Length: 196
Image 1 (cartoon, helix red, strand yellow):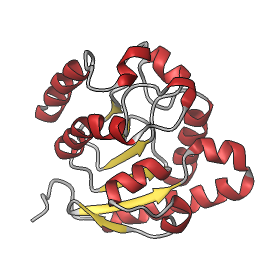
Image 2 (tube, one colour):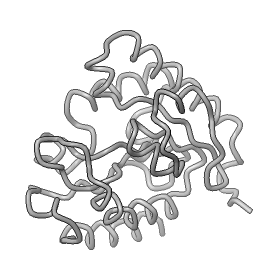
Image 3 (spheres, helix red, strand yellow):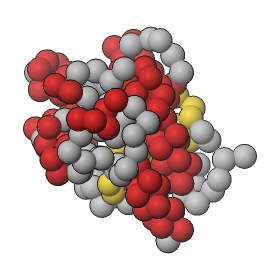
Image 4 (cartoon, one colour):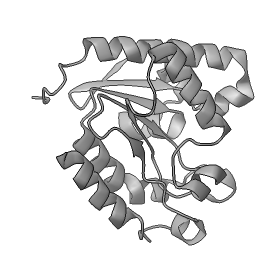
């Protein structure tokens, strides 16, 4: 599978990246995981402590919540989609990634989007949503709709850590957004068809 090989090569390059200050504090680069031929791709913010230790995205409490919501609302597991983050190294103390850090990591994410070529992208939280939609608007205003993106569709939702903090109302909104993403998958361009 060409995409898998190319992603592996980019992951190897990223594993020694020193383009921004985050490289100095990381344990490991968290490049991404999942099906490189997936129709569905999730993009989050940045690795947390558990992700930094294990080298895998969304493996802490918020990742377990996300996996459960995706299974319950979409019937999918990690073998069915690809998941990554806007920045590939953990910001210290789980702080928000800074603009220059996002800029430094953008070529890796752009290549992941190009190679996987998902029919639907779900952005998790403010940073991924603002970056991919090239907007300053916040997630609270942007979620609840589907946007055209790279020949497919983009569905913004909250980051699962916000659901852990915000409780039932945020979880309910995330569930609605995941249903929206499932519907978008059903109506997106046919599998294998490239955007014109």
